[in-house]
Length: 210
Figure 1 (cartoon, rainbow, N blue to C red):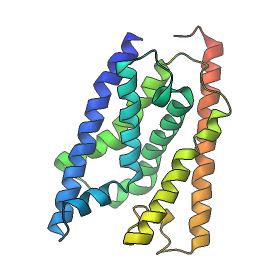
Figure 2: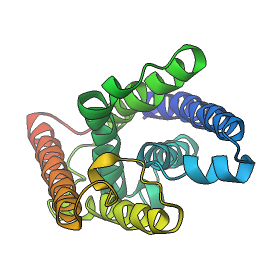
Figure 3: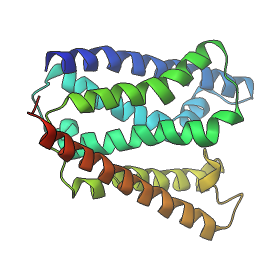
Figure 4: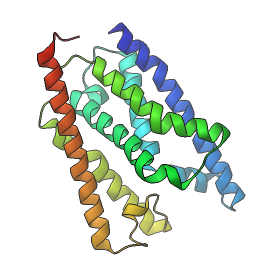
């Protein structure tokens, strides 16, 4: 438990610093493009990566403060949903999005933290939890985050015309394709969460709990 708490306490502020730092960079870019601070913050908070990393920070901060607490953001089903979400952030980014830009300097550091080190750190944190807490039904709960984000993103886009991710952008493809992509995303989350729940149960059978 000491290692888990130390990991959570170390990772949470680093990830939060990268979220804030990248938000500052993005807001400065928006200002240079003719917008203002409010425009920059609004645009930045439209990204799944940002919101998911903030969720990660919340879960890790809770564990750092009260590692034995398994309620609220630290309930097993929330932690499973968070793990599934941040792992998908890393996988989708590296498979579909990383090739579309080439960040440098501080932006590159933030990029690495938010898309690579955050998923790895949270996976390590989750593996340090006592095994057997994840239930099969928790995998369905993992669909809540991508479903809520999809509704949030489409609603935002209907007002400002900006869709952060091309695969759920109805301005560039028919709504039927957008719906198919969203359904595929949700199913992928459930499948991923089921695999993680199976891993949790398998590790419980292999040895004593932490």
